[in-house]
Image (tube, rainbow, N blue to C red; front, top):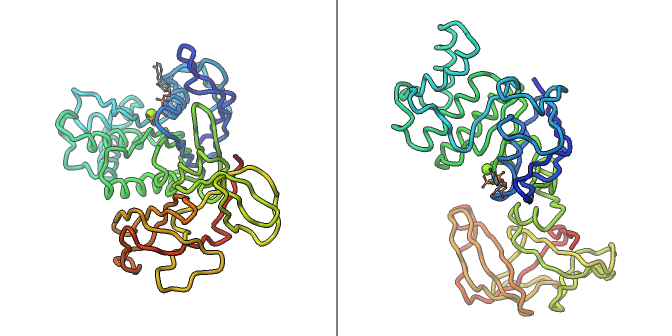
Length: 355
Ligand SMILES: Nc1ncnc2c1ncn2[C@@H]1O[C@H](COP(=O)(O)OP(=O)(O)OP(=O)(O)O)[C@@H](O)[C@H]1O
Ligand SMILES: [Mg+2]
């Protein structure tokens, strides 16, 4: 199995740096998710590691060997493309068998491994079909089977589950993780879906405009985003600019204050207060509000099945989002727009991010 090291990797298209100085070390057997919005350079990074795109500068080491100038076939990599890139004139089974035939394995072993790979992606029944007779999600799974079947020392997957329905995506996600762990395959997995990254990666690398914005365990990136960009990407919808004061209050730019700490922290520093919508406490009309609670009104309620999302406006004019469980998950009855409430923010729910 392999380590991967990227050293000041750059890809320029004209005067655009699609990948702009990426340095990254992936340990043996690790599953790293490259996470970021459309156009941030995820595919370009992956294709440079695979050898399908030439680096403009920097170097790529696989298992300690510099492969920057080697062709893809000499890198022993399994690659699942974002566009499936299946051979159109070959059946599903032939597509999956291709890499094994190139390696000249015995016929019986090829058949057995192809069947096993097709079972894993739930496509055994479609072994004899041509790609054009498959749905997008089925083609995507063939692509995945083809990448896994060669048991590569390094697996590169570019949004391998993007066209699958939620249930199949969940199953395939677990399947990939299980195979990857059992065989100890070093894997780089590209996605723009934070849930997917959080649930299968050992480590998440958040990218923005060709650069690494944050790199850490799923827990650390989720709980302690280091920038506004990462916080938004991790589902924090309440990001309030202001200043942390010595009194332990956060003074918002509109003059309102939120108590965030009982001890004086770093005072008078401009920052952004980040509050997850799930952490905003709602005291309904009739309930006794806490001493620091703020009066607010429900502006809109969006039912989401397990949760309901409320758009709120506080008395001082601040807009916030709160999320609560619905009756289906043991929560209270839903509030209607116009309802007057109080909201509280537990001090430990407040995260200060540098402005
Ligand atoms: N062959 C090319 N020629 C010119 N520009 C390119 C080329 N390939 C990619 N780019 C540009 O490089 C940037 C990064 O593209 P890339 O495909 O790596 O993004 P991505 O993070 O994979 O996005 P997505 O999530 O949409 O797949 C984009 O701005 C894109 O327009
Ligand atoms: Mg892409």
